[in-house]
Length: 150
Image (cartoon, rainbow, N blue to C red; front, top):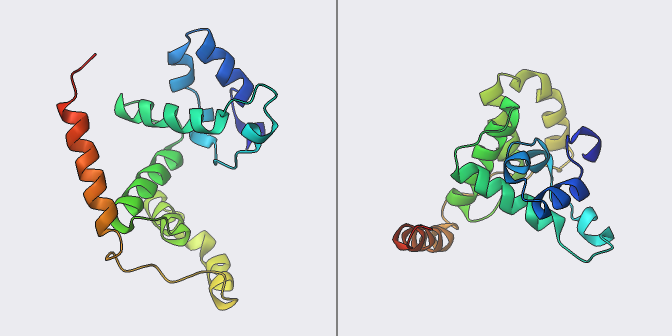
């Protein structure tokens, strides 16, 4: 995904060191990062750019900064909702929700059917297994709310 990024992972790290928080939080890079951790594995300084991208995404989200690409915002909301509901990620559900909300469902239906018939798509989990995660998440939100503002 680095070819699509406006700031490469090393540039994100340099921008943070230079105090250019807004440049990082308003970049497409933090939203395009897929968390493959290739940048972290190859980093000569042994820092974790993938973790930084995740933290920057969360910080941007908390500050109300939306990605410039509509599909990314829809995907991220679906990702977070799926995690809250199930306590884990179900890729096909997130992809389906994103396709549905962007109005692109029909274009990928043949591919989805092919993957399903070959056993590559698992059925969505029942939203029962995420109860423990939801409790932890609610506690974390309560702690965050009660923490003194800086």
